[in-house]
Image 1 (tube, rainbow, N blue to C red):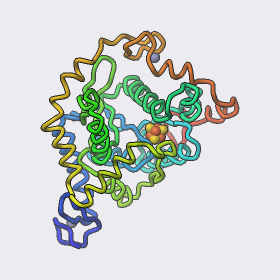
Image 2: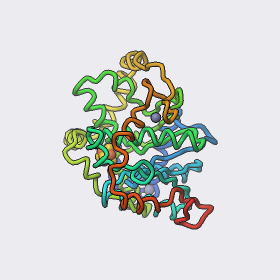
Image 3: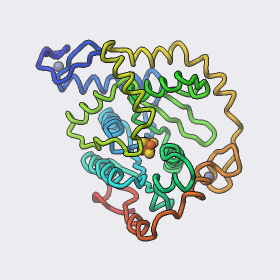
Length: 327
Ligand code: SF4
Ligand SMILES: [Zn+2]
Ligand SMILES: [Zn+2]
């Protein structure tokens, strides 16, 4: 197996490109595909400040690494969800990477800062865990980006993620979601721009990228994901991809170029006028935003001892301070 570019021994085959790559040219491919996505969808302008939503998984650490290598001013934001060992291990991966690259990692911790964790908070608020989690993430990423003066929030969604979400939206013809499923969500009324520069790269490539670059990432799936539909859609698409390489790419990019525009007018029409939340000031369609309502119902559901321990976690790991410094 030889590298398509230099004919040296290859370390990975990428069937949808019908090619094999050596270490050097595989890393170059990852950077080139990221640059192509950024340029094609006007995701990040030169000189903009970037905030990467870091989970400790392969995708978010890989995109953070690629952006730093490309010379972007990119800080990380880690959100502690309070999901037992999974959160402890993923936080450690995020911190270790920040130390390794002398990069700034901002930390927000749901239990310490808002008095709930995802499993107990979701129960108290009568939401499924992933719904409480998604709502918390969206709100806190937006808030951190605006408070920190960042121009854009980057997430690590890759081609497999986007193809699986698209598959689910098409199965149920969720036309409002289809109208909003874009690799770039422009800034509007108190929301920062959000972008997904990994849409041209797959899950397997991101895992390989981290291994090759020596980036330690959390391999386990979040325990809350067990049995969720998204994983089932990924499996279904993997089965199709195995017999027909390139299907995920054609499905997703075909949607963007040929179908997405048909659903956009409906999604845009449904964008209601936004007010400022009376509690936190975030944009909302009602008096109090969904996040503040969640905190009101879920907050305070942790034992006091647990909160006290978690209150001691660092908020920002900054390269200008010694690793582990508390600010
Ligand atoms: S699986 Fe659900 S609970 Fe776990 S991180 Fe993802 S959205 Fe959050
Ligand atoms: Zn090569
Ligand atoms: Zn609010």
